[in-house]
Length: 434
Image 1 (cartoon, one colour):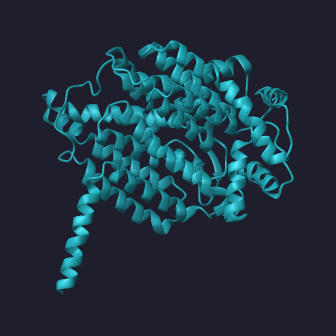
Image 2 (tube, rainbow, N blue to C red):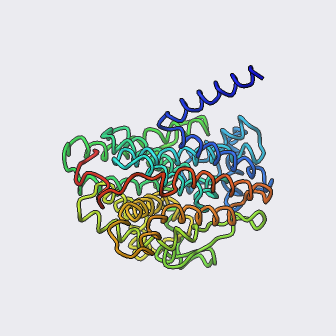
């Protein structure tokens, strides 16, 4: 009995020390997300949606017989091929690296929040929203290219905010090498720099100018891994762009297609797989408050909030830019092109909820005060409910996941656990982070 008491006492001591680690709750969040991915990683055992293209091509790469998808840069398929080589040609091998990149994205949005001088709890709210956002969870559950491109872009944002422009440029090149849409990271950081910094213009401008150089240097190295020979990167890139230019709304008739403005005006859905239901669908609660949250970011940006300015730049560079692109080029687009924007939406919603919770004493109505006081808690519970309902995790785990997440929310985000009320501005005006 005495040994058991000592054991429990030591365990409590270790747990108390662990909880004082700044990233303890983030690590709990990531671990839980990883476990939920593992419950569904092999279901279905068949290829899902565009896995038919990318996993099949990754198999050829793993076998050493080259690549047969000329429309996209090779990095994403090389990573999937690496999973097949290391873990085997099965669902676990196809999907484990997308899962790991998705988990890295959760960590990166937390660190981005911290670099923007946002409070720890707000950063954890943003990470929670991203981790259990249905679209984000699904995209990081299957062997498509988008998760690699998005995660490299998030890493680029973090390094840019730290002022490490050259490394950020290299990461943008990697994002482009996973999928061409990674180029949209450039207008994000460019717009934020113009609005908040405009210092070290030579170093920043050089880092942007070197992105195509990084791309052109790394592309032949990736091709060498695939083909064992040098391939002209300029000619290859021109070919990829030309092939992509043929894909227009005028040429392709498909119910899967959608224009960019439809993604947020309507709740667009693509069914990747019926059962378990892998749905390319934004969580309804995030969709419902996306536009109001971005409007609030515009208000905060006018007041000098650096975090709001970055959030708006992220939204503009990865979403709004698609509208003129679609109108001018008629290029085909799909709702899963919204995936790079989800981090910005989660950040905007987290900031908006935080400000609502912090400013409830300013209102006279007792009912309104109570609603605002509980806004974070209730929204996260609703978010969890949609995740449990929509996510393709086995039914046996849905109840357990819901209970665990509910306990997590009530323990960390109940009104009595949040900080004392603060002024409306939650960051330091125009203070610049790179």
